[in-house]
Amino acid sequence: MWTKDRYWAVQRIGSVDWLLAGAGFLLVQLLTCGTSLAGGGGFWTPLIERLAAKGEDRAELERLFSRQEVTFEERIMPLKVVPGKRKPDYSKFLQPARLQRAYRFLKENYDLLHEVERRYGVPKEVKVAILLVETDFGRYIGNKRAFNVLASMARVTSARDIDRWIPPEIKRDPARMRRLNTRLKKKSRWAFKELQALLRYCRENHMDPLAIRGSIFGAIGYCQFMPSNIFIFGQDGDGDGRIDLFTMEDALASMANYLKKTGWREGLNRSQQERVILKYNHSRPYARTVIEVAKRLKEMERRDSSDRASL
Image (cartoon, rainbow, N blue to C red; front, top):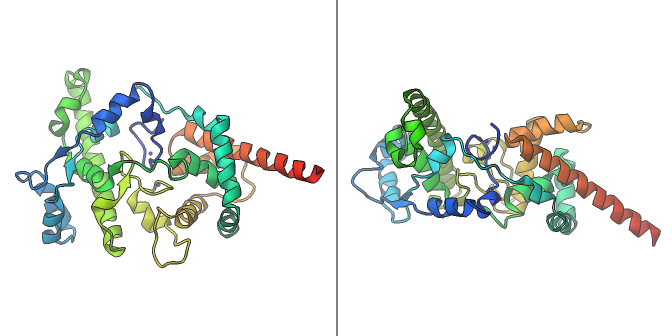
């Protein structure tokens, strides 16, 4: 289930490795400074009322939002709506060490990957490439509480809510401020729907909403789905009766189902493959990197096969 890159305009966001390098380190520090507002003077009341109006239990919402773990992540919405200067560096996923790790994962999970390919028709190399770029096979699934992220974005409906994070040049321009407020309202509605989906997912699976970690924009699991996509594309890959995107079986099956339902089929050329992957992530460099990683994994498989045949 996010546009030129993932910095601010994506629907399905997952990989945030780029935050860990260079100037991005400062950004990480800012992002970890959530404001604790549990039970704080009615700050969350407008959001609670909106959720209750959509059928959520008011008393349960009051209990949830009063917990100490609930924080207002005020820095996240500006990242979503204010264009940034940094772009993710996807070239690192083509480095030999990363490719070797991806190939090792492919070999160690060959039977599972092969079975998912048989069921959904998505090559195992493509699935491995996406897992590498999204979460490095679960090594980085995000360190934010998905609930806090989505609740914070849903709560921000005007520039007043994030005033100190708005660049001065935008504040001085009335036209840009109007566009910003329009965009904030749109993204708030989007985040509200994702928050509803997260609450539903947790309720149906008897999970604590505040226990789920995700990306800085609320994507969760090894495959980094937005919560609403779980109900559209999620699959119970291991047959245990629930969809848990923090298990490899469910994550791979759900990812493959997503790609299949958005157009993946046998015989696609490179350009057609790119168009399908762009529906998974709206970044063209991301899509091209996934295709290139998959291509190199196939080459590594062929070399291995040739070497074994020559023995």
